[in-house]
Image (cartoon, protein in one colour):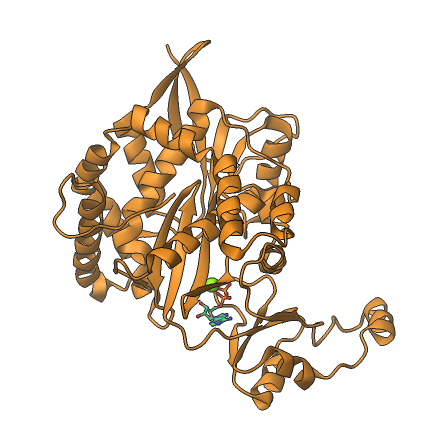
Length: 424
Ligand SMILES: Nc1ncnc2c1ncn2[C@@H]1O[C@H](COP(=O)(O)OP(=O)(O)O)[C@@H](O)[C@H]1O
Ligand SMILES: [Mg+2]
């Protein structure tokens, strides 16, 4: 019997992409030869069992969509990284310890256009704490909030330094709104950030390994309609920058499953939120673009397992800062250097060669899968899980149409019209 290498899925409420990932794994039935013989790649979902620190891991690689909020699973993941050399998408040692604020600082140093941002001491501290009372009385002196905000300029956004899911985000137009928002922020630590307004395009780029899918995003729509099906909404220059910026952020922090939000204003790119590791990957959010998640997740995990790629647990800022600090390089030259560093980290050329050689026919398998009753059952289950019964028929038809269009656009050999294009 051939050896087996297991991919583990660390899941919470997800329904659709894991089911698709598993179904496609069965269809591809990947196996690879090494000097020590062949091994098959298998996938299964990780259960929350008690574990000894010295337990071996059944998995060589884990895709995680849970540990940003579920602590037990996070600690298992850390143990797997420290004790068992398990490859993780994403690595908790960089993902849990680096939040929005770190990403702003790091990209500012690299010369990326971060809108003017300031971090405020929190408005309130835990009550009945002598230690907080003494410390803040000594060191957290009064400051002039209006003066700080004037330096940022209105309108501005007040948002938590470690935000996510729009928690505590407020658009602030004037001093009265500023004071109200700050008073309401309580014990949260907040950024004030210049609003990039008016803007031409809001783009959200989902990235898995070196594969990047920039999507037009309309934050004013309900969740299922925020990703807009649109092509060529970025100029070639902005398209290049979104691609490089996304890979740069991810390679810098070793995030391999992340999404980056940026705003284009007058042909300049301003990232505003790019620490979204374990991004929403569900069919009912991504619809037309959902097939990209399934394909890129498969290819990247298979590449890592087949080649025995080692997860980099440690960060290495120096080569990036050497470029960022170099006054002789202009912005475009810096981007080119960052792209090179990112592609080295992701082994992008080797990855593409691997995909072409080992999975040159994956598009036809995907096309077949997305047209199957097996996929349709997954789609129906997902819609029934999140929409009220009276809307099931309407949304099943809606998502069926969009996913079919996306899959055909992306995978059919001579698709009519233009399909979504991933970059890397
Ligand atoms: N600097 C900014 N300029 C313009 N819009 C912004 C800015 N910061 C935040 N926003 C708006 O607020 C939304 C939520 O802010 P974001 O930083 O993405 O927080 P979260 O991490 O909670 O998603 C964004 O999707 C965008 O619509
Ligand atoms: Mg956001």
